[in-house]
Amino acid sequence: MRERYQSKEIILIFVACFFFFSTQLNASDKLKLPKGIIKLDGRTAPPLILNDMEEEKYDLAQSKGRWVFVHFWATWCGPCRREMPTIQSLSEKIDQKELEIVLVNTAESEDAIFEFLGIVAPDLNPLLDKDGLVTEKWQPRGLPATFFVSPQGKLRFLALGGRDWNSGDYLTFLKKLNSLKGL
Amino acid sequence: MRKHPNLLYILIILLPLFITNVVAESKPLPEYQSTYEDGDIKFRIVDRTPENISAFYQGREFKQTAIDEILNTCYFTVIIHNKTQTTLWLELDNWQFSQGKRQIKRINREYWKNRWDAINLNQAHRSTFGWTLMPEARDLRADEGVGGSIVIPIQDKPYTVTANFATRPDKSGPIKTVKIHGAQCVKDIKAKK
Image (cartoon, rainbow over all chains, first blue to last red; front, side):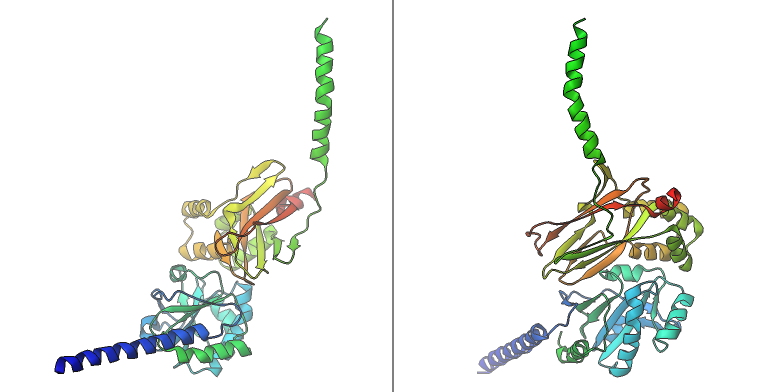
């Protein structure tokens, strides 16, 4: 009698898990991706451990449990320069407990970064990939590139090139990410 | 005495061939247009002057020996926009650079690695330089753009760029070809003036 009860329990757990994962996958599939955002295969995000401009160490592994917007950029890249003010503005609109914004500058000096960000995005504090090796491990398709890392630490989406993150479709997409916490 | 008429016949036979070749050689190529655009692609060559190149890399604190290495080459930027609704394959190995029938070998990343090793360029500058080069291969998605620099040895005459792109995600579509005639290394234009 007890054995039959246990096997029913196991079946129920399986059914519950199946429904949970299929709901999450469906949600991901149904999420309308705005122009220039592509779905990734969900491989584990490469390590990201760097210091920011205030020499505070950041480790992506500590951000598990929330979505992370990992943005690679450089001051010499035209689309990066146009996009950065929109990221500054986005950072004021979203709750970073749900979507954390992490900027990674690729292989530039602090002076070059400060000179640029001081004017266009003074509140942003990028991580410094001083030798560019972390960027190379992430293999963005060019600069700028924005990866969306899921609360489980998986690479789920990639934004190709630059854009205005405050325009309707992108804001809607960013807000909907939080409904995909199981990814 | 019999040799002379033979020589004459040979000359008569060869003369039209010679003339045809001269005419073919001197047939003007289409005028240089730095941009090609149709319903599938926008392809633009941006010529870089030595001053442009020096200013850019000096601004990034590259040492002069590294800048000189770049200035010793023919360096230009290409910007591509895939206007199709499918994949366009950027594969630089499928591009040709030529002067008439002569093929020009593109300077690849391996060359730069060796040069940077030789002058002991720091890792940050190698990385920055690498990001300014055109990717070797990329599956350009619908509406995706890409830009980057391409380097060939310095040429003293105009050259032709032939860019071939496989199409569709599995490369099963027709090859898209863009040809730009009459491109020139900017420092040669300056030298001629």
